[in-house]
Image (tube, rainbow, N blue to C red):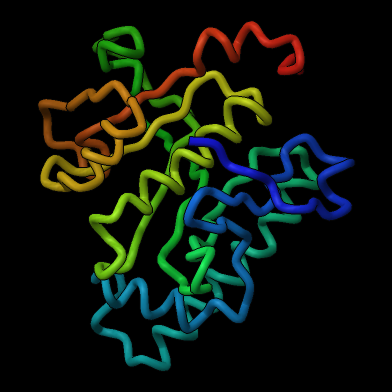
Length: 217
């Protein structure tokens, strides 16, 4: 699956970590905007990731704070030459419908205790570049999450020169585990109870990409 960058703005020519809007066969993946507020609120209510104790007004105000922080992060991370962390909108390319979110996120856990990372039972936490995705329930089961995540994986490997990328979820989130499998991730599982880090998907850059001289940092 190949993504196609949209025309780039001025940041693209001056910053190697800038992520332009990406197009896939069915999707547009772009930075969030303040006009996406209601779409984001609806998404988190739909998938029950909101705080039910808040009133709709309180929930919207809280989400607006997060949205502005995310939007500001695009610029701040770029200025500091840091990884392009933050969620991005998944838009249906034909209809313009807001389907959900996908993005790069930091993951700070004892990954080296897993076999794929070295099988060191005493290892402490290390930072890894992770993937995040969340889709409206009506958009699930259609391959959108895999398509969007694959676009970010390709960009991470070919443009950002990342060697590996991970995703984490809970044991009972079978849909997310299936997305990991479709992305070609190696699946690792923690046997002990570990909130937020029960299943880990690991994907490493293909040898053909690593040998590409244009990928040199």
